[in-house]
Length: 188
Image 1: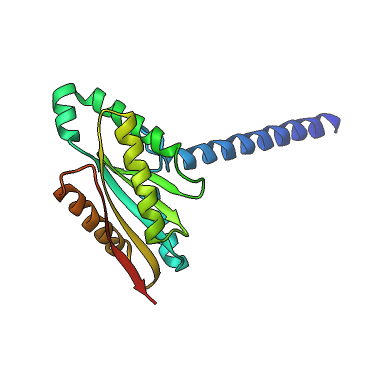
Image 2: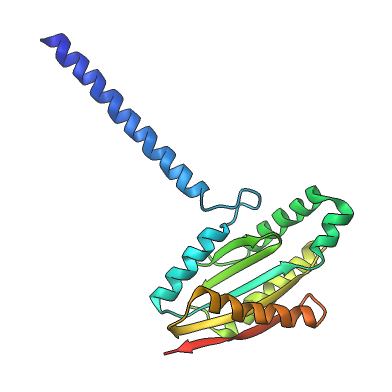
């Protein structure tokens, strides 16, 4: 009788430890699934999720989208390893200079997005200029940045990104290393 209780206790303890082990690995995998492996910032899927949540909450936020000026030429001239180093360097710089409530991620290639909850158009221009200046002063490259503000109402992720892209295209048309505001969504 005692040996059966002992064996059941050992099996129970083993199962509890195994469940704890599995839960910790699931948590690690969930976290890793949200992070871009190269830059260690949020990945595109997570940025989409955050944007969708922000839109559904119907609360004000601003967003900037930016890419690294002349990044293709950097890769072509110095190689992809050098390009990867620039991506990591810029990601680290920006991550160190944003609020803990902001969402910053790599959107693809050399394109990044920063979502700033409770931030209006006048404030996002200050944030964008700060980022642009920090990168220009601390790296060998520059950024072109486009921004937008959402103040509420019915919209979708594509509309938000389209308005921010409008600002990005304006910046590139100015000759790069600029910030331009694309517009406001206010469908209330």
